[in-house]
Length: 304
Image 1 (cartoon, rainbow, N blue to C red):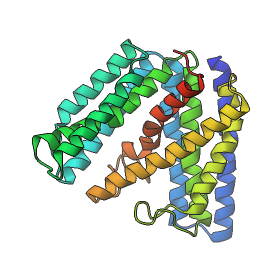
Image 2 (cartoon, helix red, strand yellow):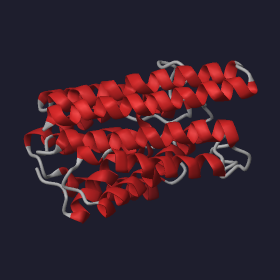
Image 3 (cartoon, rainbow, N blue to C red):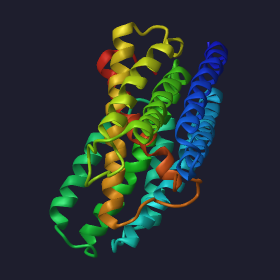
Image 4 (cartoon, rainbow, N blue to C red):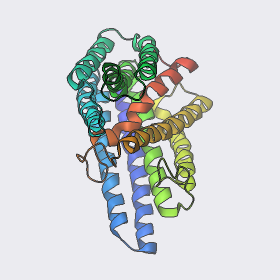
């Protein structure tokens, strides 16, 4: 089954990237090739690499899924905690990373538990947030920021581990990560080419109504093209997944933007050309992982 999905995935991705490249060339021919369009080409190359980084371990399965979650978790948490420190917060960075890693290992050893652990940790964060108030250096404030870095990215990535260990794990990962990238890339392409009306001017000034709507429509369309990843899904369930992922990806992007604007930085880092840090690349994937997991549970589609 994995081999069949992988072969069809290569064909579909070839068509998608060919269409995106053609659209980019047409845009260059009409408007001329400027720095923004060159950046767009670099962005699509980075997106293709980001897909490979996730899809290959998901295909290999087992410890490779865990290894990817560990690497991404450590890199993203380091960037996130560094951003907090830049803004004047003082999280316990090492403790947060070690605790996050322990949850990844626990999820790998005990599949099925993370869905029950996650809500309690979110409640704990909000209790700490309420108790800490506006202080940035008190023990409660430090605990609050440390707890946040455990939830995002580590606990969110634990859902990726959980999904990757399922019998249909590779297909599920291809579906939800592939669609989250399609949503992000299509919104960027449509918004940068045709966007006029700002939709979140204060939170995310570059986002436009045209980009958000275009991204959502592309995501729903590509969801149907990705039917082979989840052959047991009906059309309605597949479209529902596309809608949930489009909404979750947008929410994740806005969530990340709010964090950065609160601190006063543009990106979490500069490791990836045109994208920023590792967390800037995988923020939607990380945020959507628990969203898609609970969608599977709600629709009765997921099995471990």
